[in-house]
Length: 213
Ligand code: TYD
Image 1 (tube, helix red, strand yellow):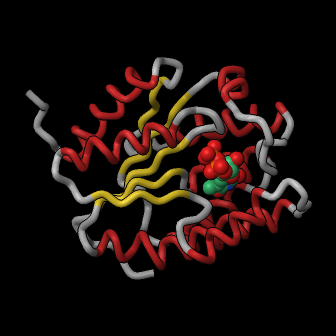
Image 2 (cartoon, rainbow, N blue to C red):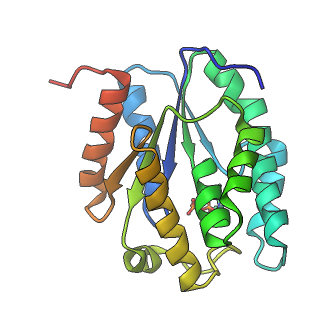
């Protein structure tokens, strides 16, 4: 993977299922475009032809797969995404907003499935190389609230046990504790509008945007 020296910026949105990050990402894209910035949005797993096919396998509740297969499929989908989308977009100086990235794998496969964290991190390096996020917004929500927000028809990951999601939530909090410069934790219990005030503040800070009148 070539080294990354570009004007582009990679911002990732993370959190447990039901934390509201996808809604916030859409609002963030709209806001930044209104300020004249060139924004691309992506989601994980997905956003390339191969990654969307892998996504279908990963989320299919009828499929039973080993934990290592699951880990490798997430990383394979990610490697495609970096190669086909993230690297070229950043090289063109774009600002990329990505719904989930490797922190989800650390939290779900590393902490949730209890896979060796050193191995998991090593695979992130293989999949993304120098394409680490410039900023990660972690939407923190008590597990109970998140579970009630989820829709019916759970996908394969959403059908996991409560104990699994407890470990995932702890994983996200530990990631934030280990990398406070990259990861900003936002309280996702508030209303969508109030959470977005905090998102906007973080984006303005990172992109050095002057406050709106
Ligand atoms: P998605 O429908 O995108 O969930 P959400 O809208 O809540 O983001 O499905 C992604 C699911 O895959 C979600 O349950 C989290 C899980 N996941 C992992 O387990 N590992 C990963 O690396 C990623 C990116 C997602």
